[in-house]
View: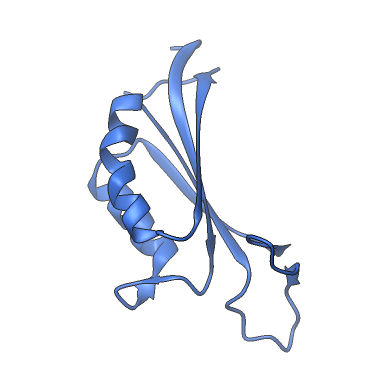
Length: 109
């Protein structure tokens, strides 16, 4: 329903971040899917920085591990409130942004 309210959460991770020796971004996506979150996407950056660190970019000779990975997901306020405590535990030292959004098209059913 257009005009409905929802919550969008954006997590700023690093591709080297891990949760129980597995890539954190994949573990977050798996957790969100298991919890029935409506939609989630992980984007792998080609350049960026986290915190006050220098800008990292890809080079053909680099093995990786320093670039940002951004996870964005959208759901109802109640659902976001339910999953956020675990996400805060999983990404304890990473930036998590929550914002109210308006659904311009589609719905969360």
